[in-house]
Image 1 (cartoon, rainbow, N blue to C red):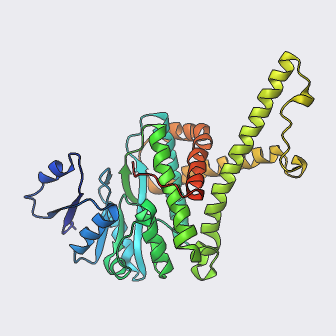
Image 2: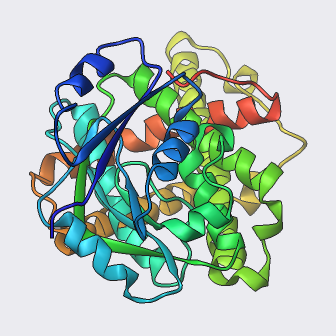
Image 3: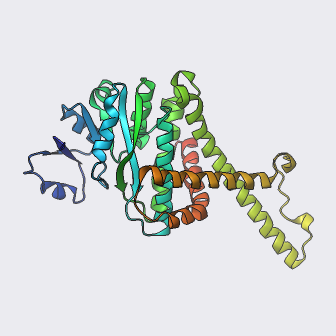
Length: 341
């Protein structure tokens, strides 16, 4: 069934968006809204206010959906208590190793999103193609700023109100991936700091709350634990690497080992938590992640070569991800605000 209406919104852009939109001004099913810049959440609310349909869908400007995706995602609204449905996001035509790493990471997210949906544990309805039951969004007051993560804030608000968020794994949507490390870290810093701020400041009542089922007692606590453990593993790896380098240099130039790298943190004895345990945990985590990536590829049937993605993910992700996790944690701790781009 064709879409009844497509609303295209220009949130006071300063690039060529308005000119590109003007090409569709005579299309019968396309409505163009130009407004003063107020942030993505205000643009979404303007679009919702201009509609009267039962379902509304949001699609980012740098994303596009595959044919048949709308049919897949709409079918999930058969249950009346479903307030939102997410799709399967993947990277469009990854070229660099960094983009191929993200390609594998996004497929990992597809697998995790589908699993979490089975226990109503989703805490984000991604901007690239999520659909909502309009009456639920309006009843909750529309989208909010949400610390630059309005899609996450809306999902948390829906969850707090007792609604269900579903997932359609074969509703495929493609998005562009950051091509440089700097852009990737900036994007992920915004996402991660948005998560931390939303949970710690605005939706702390969800954390550990059994009234919200698996989301409260399992999903959100584990999300926090994964951030902390990733940073810890990265720091331990750096410590061990530096220690081996200093030891090797000392042996080379003949300095007694007793004078090298004797860092003692609060009399901590590594015997009780040996460094090789971190290596075992790291390998187990990597193997589990690779397995979920393969499963996500089969479930969603996302096109593309997975092998190079798995290789680049295995080599780079463990070194790159802690960079934005540490930066996000520092930003939240010191209340640092960063721009969208």
